[in-house]
Image (tube, rainbow, N blue to C red):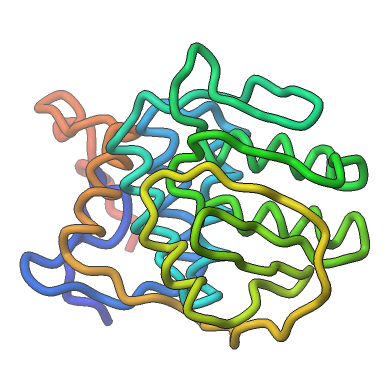
Length: 227
């Protein structure tokens, strides 16, 4: 039995005071959904964000961490969709979640070559490219100055460029069809540091109602005894 006290104002399991902990994929998805909602994402986009974080964590990539960075940065824009170039509205950096959701909605009808300008945390778009690959029946390549990653329906291909992509805060990328590649091994969870977990939990807590004297007064069974 867990010895961690249950606090209804917490978004989930309490963040440890030091170190970190390993979260399962469902825990990551739940935490990231609440964090996205707390950061102001509408319901459907928050679900897409949680899906992306979980997918990347299963691929051994920093999905929850990069989503936290995306939420903390704020100010990123939904795509202004053109025939071959997508940009962030009003000249802002392009949101990878909004752009990814738009891509997956067009999975069978994406331009053969597409340029996404100033894409924030581009690793977050990989899960959506996997959906595109599934929809069009072939792998998709994401390239940027100095690197290239191939994504199939089962996940991203292996290689040093994958780690480089995970570290990019912003890049202009090109998307095109590609030959298939061997996918990385899938993971059952991911270790999150205290800081990364606390950042996501801080956003998630915005979806809860803090306890008050009034709510505490009405809690519990009172004088009822059901024994």
